[in-house]
Image (cartoon, rainbow, N blue to C red; front, top):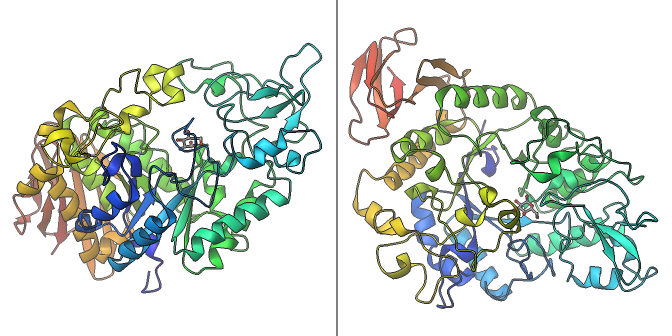
Length: 530
Ligand code: GLC
């Protein structure tokens, strides 16, 4: 890497749900002016980009992933002027803004769909995917919705079914109709011209479907506790021929505006995931999001396996990326024990690749139960164990009322444990988890070996994971004790002496050792070889 290294390869990207971050106007819902007020906090984390989950007008059948206007702001979150101010204030601090871009589908209340369903020969009819029901009234084929049930819903007025990979309130756009990409590209230019630094394209492998709509083959080993659409193999409605060209076109729109980033959500096999980097002749996503750690608990053997598998698959194709959390999964704070979160932070922030941190992860926020009368998530209604509301609750700022999130009544409950788990108390404690995140991110900036350096293959010795990060003139060792017991790590094969740059306990920097170091339970160390 050189000074030409693109910003998104060095940055840590912080994912924020604006509604859940900070409420400036006291209506109980976080908003863009609230986010502007918290930019200094984001700056102190050292992150260089934020990814905002959808900010557009939406009836919120699926938490804003059902958009009625791709060029507007949801009124509860603020106005376009508030957004412009956010971009200015963020850029002034060197923080980039990436926005979520759910363009596989729209809301059923989008004017395009309302017009499309008004008659079979309406102007926007072909912007969506229509098929006749079977003569007995059954859906046109066996395709299933991600949230359960058929992926087809009958439109009573025009007596045809429309396709929706997600809810019936989220009709899929027909990306084979040339007017659709044209409209989406124009909407991207609208945001790029406002200074947006990139997009996280939602469900990007799902843009196209097989136009002949053949049945999908049934999955004989279907697990009813998993995603309901896995009852069939999605061979005809995921990763279809032509989708790579669609994504390459999105990338070209970004490129018109310089060094913007194109991130995409793809849940698929690793072999297929890497195809979404595209080729040198036809580049696609800068960062196809890495799904490998999102369900993991901190079991050494499983983590090592997941890391090796991902690195082996991705390295020849493109720049890796890493995340423990996002808005669709249980929080790591609930998947792991509190004492494991420091070593998890070190693992995330020392990998070669772009790390993503989900709001509240840096203070160890946990899932929060949302009572049925407040719950929003359609997935959770169908499958309580897969409820996503639990990971979307208000940011815990301090130990005051509502944890300082709002002066009103919060739209979702604030965690019961906010008296202990909050930003203010961790800022007072120089050895808090928050301090660990800040120190790790600062060290990434100070030590180019951590961002730009090569990474040796991940190695595992019983409960220890370790790897090297190195540049020609700097060799670092990262050693992670994934167990609760003390572990001795012998580094003599790498060099005679090593100095501790950072311990996850933040209590023994600058100590030099000969040949070996002893790690306490769940301790992680970054060592510089001398
Ligand atoms: C993506 C989003 C998820 C949403 C779905 C439908 O998977 O991450 O939250 O429900 O797309 O838009």
